[in-house]
Image (cartoon, rainbow, N blue to C red):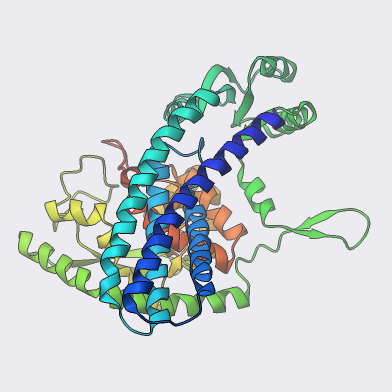
Length: 450
């Protein structure tokens, strides 16, 4: 199995390397043309290699950041989107660097750079078409033994069925089955997946799979996620894990606040034309207010008024608060557009400047929803260890209709592994989900939450 995975990684590296090589050749040619047209010699010829080196570095960093190297893991469409975004940002950064090199704003290089973007996109699409077929043939879906709580069986099977390219459930067994019979069943499968298994039994199965070198997928419990953020303690010769459980440190809060102020101010400058157009469009459609405010909850249970562009009819909640459904007739025509483009969230930049919210953090909920979710999952209150955010871990890796418990787990993953670098990464990844339709998928009709 280990050699099989190494073989997969080798092919993946080869495909990524080929893509970067072709895109670098495009850039090398265009850079030479720009250099010759400008008739300016900012440095000796060895500088050509320096510029190409920077371009390769930007490609690798941004394509990797958006998950564009994960062949046989992401869907083909996701890979094309990830690689396209990574390449576009690399090209944009390179364009700025060229401007800095020549010391002027070189309009003539816009069209060559745009041509490079088009050629890069064609290469990305063609290589992904070829690699998708190759990976499907070489690496068929893994046969899974699914061991789960049968109350969640249908929901879990539906999710796995959405990734037929990766997994095939060969057998589904109740978590109530005896341990020894579960161990026997895994021998005929490529991997085991555990969901909602009792702790003692789960631990025994994890150790058994480790001993036998069997791949295992485990849905973490809340305590597992909290332990991820623990420090190793070696005060004496018995190992311990230390959980401080107070959220972010003073230094982290200070740096995060400074970053929020700088980024939200810059975003307001860039977004102001779009905000003006959005406000006018909402006003012209039904003559109602462009903005609406709603009470939400942030750090330590503090309540604040959140601001958003109105995407529903004026009296949308006259029959009480409820989540937006897939075909919600309360959403206006303009509302559907601004929701799809996430423009309705832009006024929250003012909330960030005020200090009610952060750029990155768990999405703020209403108090009545928190009370409702806590009845089923008391740990839902743990999300209030940090400020609410404009974007967050659960928004990037989940959907609008992801269950409250799964959103909680993702938010705790963010809190327990917090770092400034992770915030920067999540901000960049937010750009990707703006182009991902399923991330805004509503709940089913008649449901109040997922």
